[in-house]
Length: 432
Image (tube, rainbow, N blue to C red):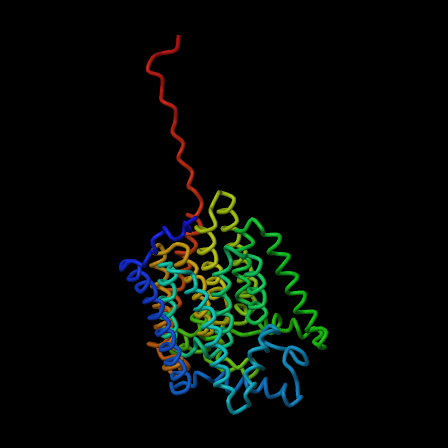
């Protein structure tokens, strides 16, 4: 018998389908070219820009890594540590090719992590929202400037981007990744907290968070850390008011206006610039409890929206953004690299909601650009409380409050709104 397949005409790809395939791959190739150019420009800024953007890497991180290599002390194990214990992994790994190449190795590690996140983002087929989110990220990074690569936050930012790409389909795997990121820098716990509120598998999420954290702590204890594994909690609580923090603006403006009693100083232990003046000791004592209460209030708002029937896609992205901004704004620490935390929530929102997130996407770009203007290029003017630079920083902080207000509004509106009750019509005739 003749082969039935022989009677089937061979289907040649049509001109239209070939053209569509080419057009589908063109944006991806363009975005990858943009990724290379953006990161090349950021590397050059890290190495050449005024203000020493690689200062933390070349001085602080490098000293920690060298102390460990020479057998002096391992931060987080032998001594207290300002960061959670897993922060030592990229810090120590950057010595892989020797002390002379430490800054280059650090930049290579961060670029590799960004590349993995970017590849997973673009691996979503020809999803236009994924292309939009990737394009937004390529705009956000250069607007934020060298700080996007030159701090430990860059490691957690890339990890958080991967996690938000997994969180819908693989929430438990995303929780493992976010828990690991939290043990590098605390802020990614906001994404886990939001997932606990929104997910139907919340108790599994909590169990994974606890189990992963317990494993990390057990390893640290096995290495002899003792209570040093938790030292980042006390070191953060004891910090003063950093000049870039929103609450620090109260005394920064006093210094800018020449009012007596307010001035900027350098904390030799924490290695940051802080403000001091009338009332700062009270603020230092109150800010940590205020931060906890603010986070709890946002979570409660999200929980109420969930109970009123809010769906995952309408609730989770703005709840994550609101929590991240709360960690930034209700904080006595206000480092410029905190703005890098906005990447994951905005990418998530663009993926899930598309054009409905145009406003926060644009606001985040403006916030990033103002942050780069302040640091590293004109930072020395902020250190002398120049009124113009204080005004720029204040404007940046106010835009973050605007973005927080938008996110909280979206959390509230994520639940179906109850229809107003209509009173029954009055009878037209008297009852018999």
